[in-house]
Image 1: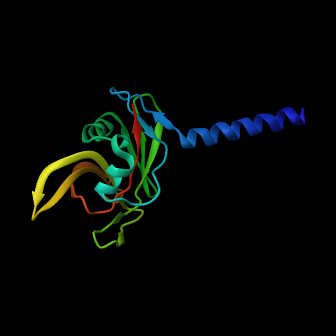
Image 2 (image 1 turned 90 degrees about the vertical axis):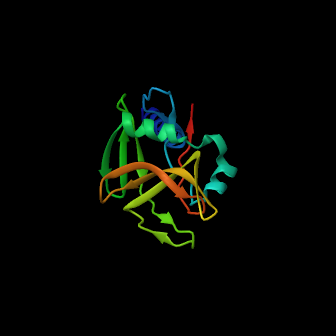
Image 3 (image 1 turned 180 degrees about the vertical axis):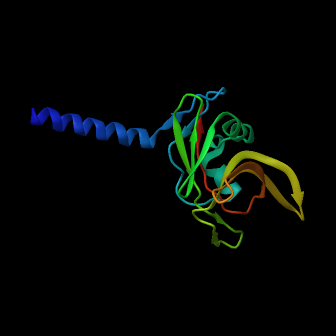
Length: 157
């Protein structure tokens, strides 16, 4: 009996670890599944595109996430619950300025999308990103200069 209990505990632990490494189906209309954790580090837009490519969400996929999910603040981020009741957590890991300075960790965060913006100011390109702010309880998709450092959350169809 003790061996069976130990075996069950090992199996549950393995399933839990597998779920942490996997993707969650939030029940979104597009069928997009969201990774259960962020990729480590901060990336400029070009670094994110080079390393992760089309595994980055598009602007439309971020908009779908905002429109179709319930967003609830938690200490240092948001819990995002899909139409099917499944959830992911998006931490507010802060942002790296173009000078490499970490700002607003625990309160603010940004996630790069795959979608480049048409905006160019003073010869600088912009791309779309998900902007989250725990203090103001706000979530939006907006344009950001591509040399800023942001988090990355991957998706799969």
